[in-house]
Length: 187
Image (cartoon, rainbow, N blue to C red; front, side):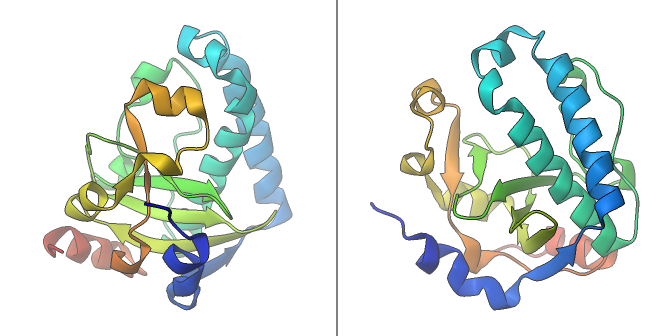
């Protein structure tokens, strides 16, 4: 089925939270994304897909920074190392098994087909503005998947990831307490 970005994502923009990142924070994100990309390009599976590595790293860290700003809690791990050592939830330092999926405006977030944990969905709206769209529960992530949303044919061929389009089923949050409540509520 053909998905429509406006109908599936933009239509709900009034419910998203806009976070503006300051230029000094963006500079820190750029530095981190550059160093992370250099390290990851030494790993075999990243050599294959290295072309987009920097863009993905910068998109991801901007989404995390926006969530940190909203929650007024620091949780980002600024260390850089082997990917296998970082396969844990982004909010793990806060005691929450919740990840953050960030995507550029105009694209759908890419998620694992086999869902490990709930995710906070963010959209990098432009250079310094991030939209925090909401909390996606595991059932919502499982239900609203579409492989056709993956732009890269090589990634689609792998069969391990898919696109997410259930923006109308995201739950709002503004605090850690709200996030904990989201994990208890089943949709």
